[in-house]
Length: 220
Length: 194
Image (cartoon, rainbow over all chains, first blue to last red; front, side, top):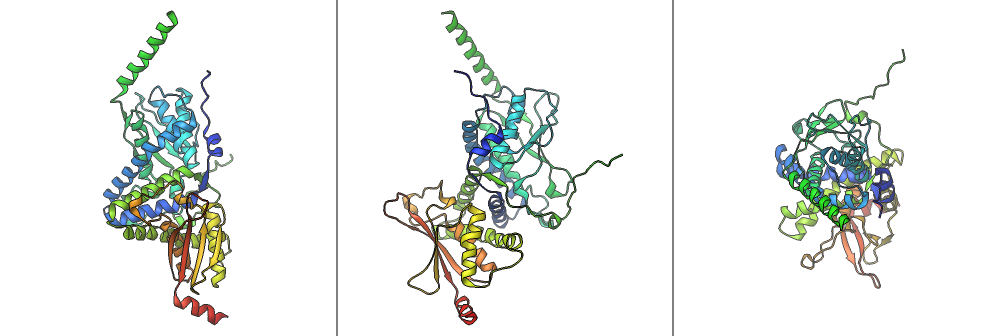
């Protein structure tokens, strides 16, 4: 059976049920407000937002994999791509010449869930670290950070989502915010995803195993 | 040389142009977010009444903002001042913007003068939620009740708004009814206005 081609983020987004982005934005704002009232410490709120995002991410990855037909990502670059597709839509063309599939992945995810485009860039030499750029982020419509909350990463839930989703596919990552429009930087939001591979060796080993057994079958 | 176009940066969020309200996110993204909201609140409270109150408070904030946004964008800065006007605003405009369709029905309560009910076969927020038996009559529609209360309060119609499940014959899942009970002063004002 021929493998199903991965669907583009736009195609998936057109087929799933959608809700008004403003309801989403306002609900997210209500959550952040509740957290600020309860916890009062900005650092605590950041952590809690990340944790909530993590909880979402570990469940979201199932839906994403089911709906987008992306094949297994061979390495981290592919994954980063899938994620950007996962969360947002991309604005700039990817300048990295790695397998287009991975880069596609990041783009697919963001488009599929938030309806926005994201791009992946700034790969470091080893291919373990990259930045995801969100052109426009539905979470921050109508939002302004007051002076008392300047340390707040308002969109920290997104980093948690990415971390949770990646962990379910055996990749331990760390997601941080580099630049944030709400904090006064003039550029679009950026994220950097350095990554460690605690399980990568096992993964590779498994892949190799499968290849070997296929070969044996052919002989017999 | 033609100047390169630069994206205009807005330092003040109030200077940014308002979105048209046509942008959408996936239903699952919202469902995940709402489930996190409920789960977080569950850890913060001891009983169901508190949980409903917290969800309502969250909704209240949303409602207050929705009122301002819609009045400015869709109604040309005019706000309803009559009871029936504001109720149909909630029932049609607010529901259409937030949930993509008008509410199923708007009824006047038969027993009391100050009660009105908005019914919905399946609230969007309740779609992926099942209530365990030991939580009794808890309804996550309290969030939507909060939204309605926020809209009404902001418009000058103080009310007590609650969400209830109403079992319907022939349907597996019960219908949800948002019960709105207006404060005394609203009725007096309405009577005075004739």
